[in-house]
Image (tube, rainbow, N blue to C red; front, side):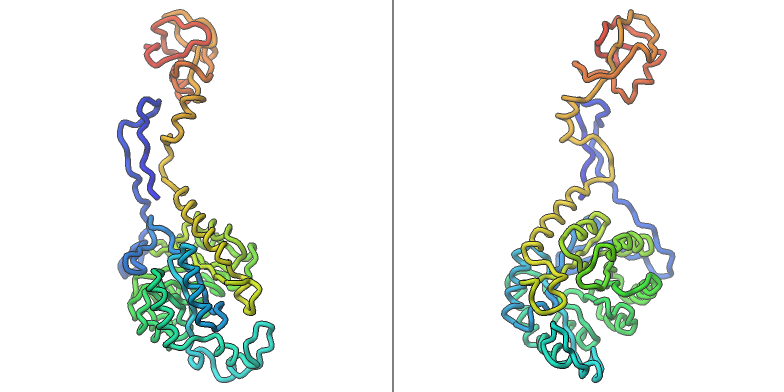
Length: 386
């Protein structure tokens, strides 16, 4: 958030005017297509990037256990926690998986059926249920979204009129999928789990000529995610490599500290999985925030955003009281007669009354002649020297 440079009347070094912070411009990409903005409208009236507040996505995914009532409860709790968006994952299973993948036995403790297909069908809402969830989200005033996990799901979500598309990490290197999705003209949030930088460069070159409104999200696809596997510095790598798009963070770690660090590094979208109960069946629950943690994340994100402040280093109005109490000045280290040419061994620095010559300029006094005599420990003022 921009913080005006403070004018400090009566304080040394004070400016007589207030200067607005100038935005820091991004390096222009040298490509044949036009430079994109670092900000764009993700949903009606909701800009992301630039100095706009971080967009916080609560990823319900399939943590609803296949229960529509639980899904609605979770949407409401996302809203109450202060998230900007409640998000799901939509698949058209026959388009996402081949027959063999759906038929394979699934004996995990997280299974909802003897085969992977039966497991996934238990968790998948149909089109009418998705329409109902979107209506409910709109009624309570939170943005509804879903990751389209295959091209048929993207088509349905486009018909559903979602505000943006989230590309899950499993489709980030699926270039035909990206082209199809980009051509829909909706903003895109593209996760980067399981990808290399070279692949992300291909993604950038694929999407950018088609759709200017997209961002990359640093992500590591592990559930739960250990801190040593997060690699937040990739946010800075993306900022350097792709300076004309915003960068976000999609996290699967425990707690909120790492997500807050992502904000400090410049993430403009944060996505975190949420759950009603971390002990429920399903591999995502252990990598999710409960709703108390989500609410705390939202609060602390806004604190960090406020604390980011200005690029301009200056004395702030809140510091004046401390400066007036403890700020030091140049004083006489001995009695000094009028007309004396000052040397450094005649001067020292103390908290003094009244305030006088600032210590950072003490060397400017060397060789200057005193207009009046100074007693030991007396403040040296600017008008005491020629």
